[in-house]
Length: 306
Image (cartoon, rainbow, N blue to C red; front, side, top):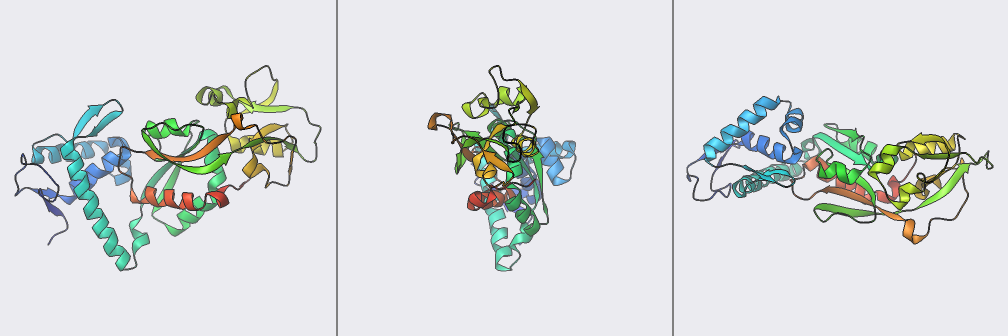
């Protein structure tokens, strides 16, 4: 039996599709990649193809099925009911192949592709240890850090596959897992504890995150010696003696160059760290594996890589 074809019944297609119809497995993989990526351009890049070819192959798939696979929704194009049936069949085939590879002891070789990772105010830079370990074990995977200021927006807009978000509430239309609390305290360089200069957020960060955790380092009439757009840069600036700022306590407390000046924030100004992905699209195996490893190592991940 050839692994490249699949009967329409196996795809869960309805009576509108002839039972003798055979689907090309490569076309199924392209459709699966397009849904996972959220657009043809990203799918083409991941597949090593050009966008025109992706579009042509999906048009051919729709013609063979005599039914559209996409429909317009409020959040963009989504699979139709038949498209979802095709995706379900492709996922079952993919899982069967992955199971075979695991039995052969080749499971790691099946994890491949590019993962787009976003973090609110650049917080992903603090998760370098588990990410580096993941990449060492999976040579066929690469990670692209997305320069988004709000990780939830980046995931919802399909700019990122995984987001590490700082938030108190999570929208109902995405999947989210808690990584623990995001507490902040005021820190200064230990060698210059009297430094009164302040380090604050740039306008873009405050515009994307008008929340208590961000407003501690922005807003009001403070005269900032330096404005930055990510937590890693803010941490480094305090560590380098530029001034004082509210930092993420889980990482700052581990840095012996920093001195905590005040107690942690009151409960009303605290937030949570969340790992988020879209709930309405398929998750690629590499994305699912990185997500699982980040969840397992969340506590150890909170380290500073300066």
